[in-house]
Length: 477
Image: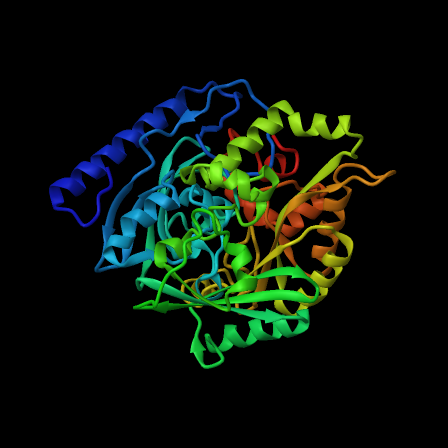
């Protein structure tokens, strides 16, 4: 049941249901013997980081996947953490509202986007999803339920929770800010043949919130090669002469080359990348014209592709076929990295020369002025979010690349990812931890807020019931 601006009786029922689900989960947690591994039993995941099996059943998070309420006056939503953004958007759009940042894939959960980070085309003005959180209810590793806010007794957990990936505790419920929408989004796909000119244009939009005298409400980019790239400028629109549909035969990323101006409904804009998992559906044949006509429209979505990936990870059918055909083994290179704007063109030039993956996604980001600035001051000059220490006031560009590369003779699986990690560090960047990581332990804690993390770990998981972040992100446990 989704509860949205309902009478007090319904809100009380929703809160009661949440309390009951919370107590069930807490009882399960406390019933796990000391020393036994703890994990969540989730039906979906957007992690590309394989984990070693524990053989133990996970915590049942049933009953924690609903929108408790939407307040259209305060522009907030009270949401259980396992709620997907698809469910959340469906609850908020009828009120003319949406989350300030809606990650690209429908099955990303709001708890996952906060504990593991998320990003989208509104991030150039709204930062990351956790910056819209007003409070978060957490089941800690100590087996206690606490409510963390920017100020108060658990402000340290509030700051350290983003990018902790469930190693300090599990989110149960969040209160988040929403923002108003209009019915349509007008898109302008601006072509660039020079990467330095592209990054200069990003800088102008970041400062002006406009481009060529038109307002910009959404900003992302697609790089096909060093001399063919597009910035997509999205602007709210109350009317549209017509709208495109990329949920069936037409493929969104191909339209960047074909339609300089386009219009989408707000819902179709938010999920424009989900239908084809950006461009990754081509690996499954879903972009083949004949196969696409046979592929049911309802199955053109990211969670279906995830099931195919999980099946391949389990049975290795494609891998065996490639070996039978005499093809080399392949290394998975699935990463998102944040590079300072002034270093982005140089990084892209290196990447396009050295790593045979295209297209590449770009998403500019800057931490929000509101909230982050106050946290920055409260931290005594430190970063507001220590486990992913982006600098306030600094513009970054998220560079996303998701594919595989052939393992060259004399090389080993992981070599390309290690080179990318080194080059990202050389460009003063950071790498998200949802996929493979190869850092040494010293380097890892230096890059990902080791001192703050260990302080929070000692307070909220003193017996180490949960894995630590290095074990989970690098050792894949």
